[in-house]
Image (cartoon, rainbow, N blue to C red):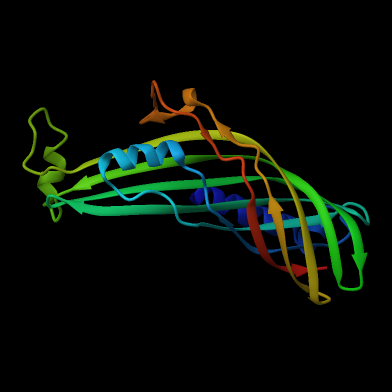
Length: 234
């Protein structure tokens, strides 16, 4: 997640009007953005249901930023980066249980201006991105002592009964988008878009602590992501 945020800030600086000047671009903009999505996590929910835990059925927010510079009157190129998570938890027989689904990515952003009327514009484009998702599982009879945590990793089982696992899957994606932007001022705009990442996580790509996981399900995250942004620049 930290890497994605660093990439995001770098992209915004490079793609901003200052960075654009360095690269002989014809102006640019950058700013804060976020996504809202209700991910279809069916295979994960099947496992949670079998454990008697709540399921991932709420909305997920991903926060980050984007920036771009104009290379012509209609074409702009830049980058973007986002990350977020959604979690569920419960308590069973004195044990606290939690499951967290996290997602983050960064990539190269290309947009084409289709229509510009007064302060309003309509654009299309897409992102070539890379990132990862993770599923964190935790079970604990907390509070536990410092010693109990470390004892659980010796050959003899400690008195604590805390368990945690993190499953991860990296990916490369293509994400088309169509959106609108409205300039409140010459240098300030608000916008939104509908992005659809072409993202199907294969069953063979899951790992835990660097080791491959066998018999894992595939996870198809190809669905609309709704993006909103506040951009500063020309």
